[in-house]
Length: 109
Length: 364
Image (cartoon, rainbow over all chains, first blue to last red; front, side, top):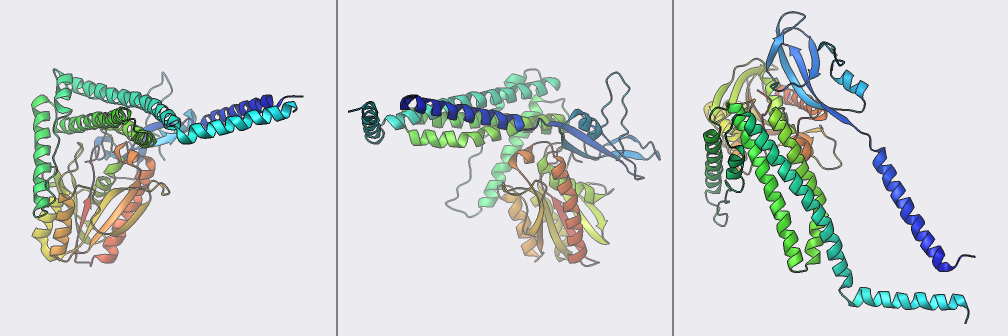
C-alpha cells in the first residue's frame, strides 16, 4: 500500500509529464510552411500570363521582355508572398527549375 | 493516534504556515519579481539580437551601394533625427506647424542620406532611408524595454515588471516584424501597406504620370465612362508621398466639378477579421499624423464633395512585410468596389478623384 505522500508526488509528476507531452505535441502539429515570393507577369497586348520566382530588381509595372505568344510587352503585374506546405506545391506555385536543368518560366495558369 | 492522523496534522500545519507566508509577507511578490525579471531578461536578449541583426542588414545594404563607412552612417542616424511634437495646448495652426516639422525632418533625413550615398539611385536612397528608420526604431524599442526593466528592478516594482512581461510578447512580435520588413525593403518588393498604391496602379491603366507634389504623381484616365484622376506616391522607391497636398491642388484646380473623392488604404484588422477583407465607408482613409488627412478633408468640405473610403484589412506585421496573396486578392476586390462606386455615384459627365494611400515600394 502506497503512503499518501507518495501518491501526491506521483500525481504531481503525472500532471507535469502530461502537460509537457501535450505542449510538445501542440508545437509539432504546427505545419512547417515555406514562403515564396511570386512575380506574376502579364502581356500588355494579349491574355498571356506567367508566374515565376521573384528576382531582385522586379517591381510592379516593370517591363521584363517580350510576350512569347504575341511579341507584346511583358510587364510585371503583381508581386506577392505565397505560403506553400510542401516542395511539390512550391514547385507548382512558381516554375522553379529542377537542379542542373535550364530555367523554364512558363507556368501558365 | 495512528499514522494517518499524524500525516493530516502535518498537512494542516503546512497549510497554516503556507497561508501565513503567502498572506503576511512579501515573499510571493519577491518570487514574482524574480520570475518576471528572468523572463524579461530572456526577451531583452532576443530584442538585442533583433536589433543587432537589423544593424547588420543596414550595413550589408549600404556596403552593396559602395558606401565607404556604412557603420558610421548608421551610427550617425540612430538616436538622431527625432521630432518634438508641436505645442498642443494652443491648437491654433497646429496642423501647419506639424506639417512644417514633419517636412523639416523628412528633408533632413533625405539630405543626410544624399550626402552619404551620393552615387546611389533615387530608389536605392529611398529604400536606404526606410532601412535606417527601421533600425533606429528597433534600437528605440530595445532601449525603452531596458528602461522599464531597470526601473522595475531599482524600485522592486513587481507590478511594473509584470506589466512589462505581459506586454513583451507583443513587443517582440512587432520587433521581429520590423526586422523581417527590412528584407522586403532591401529586395524592393511591394509591402502590405502598398495595397492603396497598387489599386491606383491598376486603375491608371496606360496613362502617363504627372508630378504634382513631392514624390507624388497623378494620372488622368477613364473608368466606366467617367474621367478619373488617380493619385499615388511615385514608385518604385519606398515613399508615401504627399497625397493630401496633391488632392488639395487637384480639387482647387477642378473645383466643384469633382463628384467624388475616393481614398483607398490598408487598414489594421481586428483579430477576428480575415486578411484581405475589404470594407467601404465615408471619410479619408489615410493613417498619417494629421496634415495629409486634414488636407483631403478640407478640400472635400470646401467644395462639398462626398468623400468615400475603401480599406483593405491586414495585420500590423502584414502591413510592413512583403504583400501576401490574401492582401493581393483584397486589392482585386477593392478595385471592383472603387469601380462600382464610380459607376453608381459619379454621373456620366462627372469627375472622380481616386487616391491610393500607402508606401509604394515595388510599385510604379
